[in-house]
Image 1 (tube, helix red, strand yellow):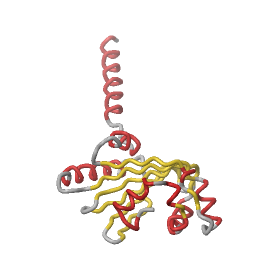
Image 2: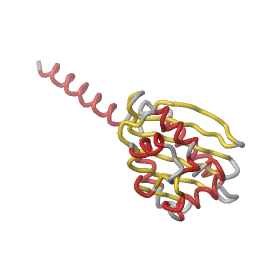
Image 3: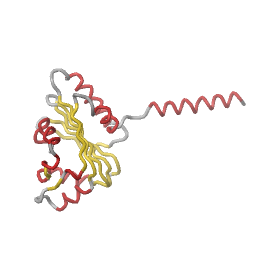
Image 4: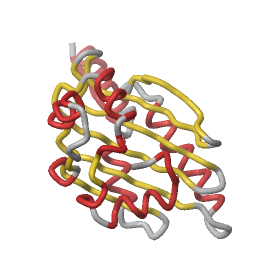
Length: 185
């Protein structure tokens, strides 16, 4: 009897340790770890700072109301950090390939690779993740947090980004624009 209890206890402890060690990293954990690094630009914006200009469609205004927060982490590559850039980009890609995220689409625009993932259900998304990377410029990882966001409406709104008031977000978005030109806001 004692032998059986010892074996069972060992199996339970081993299982708990394996499950604890297999915990996948999240984008949020990565963001928190890297936001103080000199190689990264970290931007946290509440949705209230992203005002919609008068020319925006009613649908864009309603879609913006589902967005609660925007976090952007950007790595600008240069001669001294090129090796670190490759390591960091590989880590981000590994996180996005994990079980926590579902890939929505992948595209290339003017040499910039763009991957969009999400977390939540197909018709009520809680988090969009956009990774834009260029080996000569760097990468930007954007987390768009919201409440029951709908992919088709977010994609339509992305096409209408010209109607979002960039002045309201201040200098933060201009730094990101310098990094990725017309792809970012």
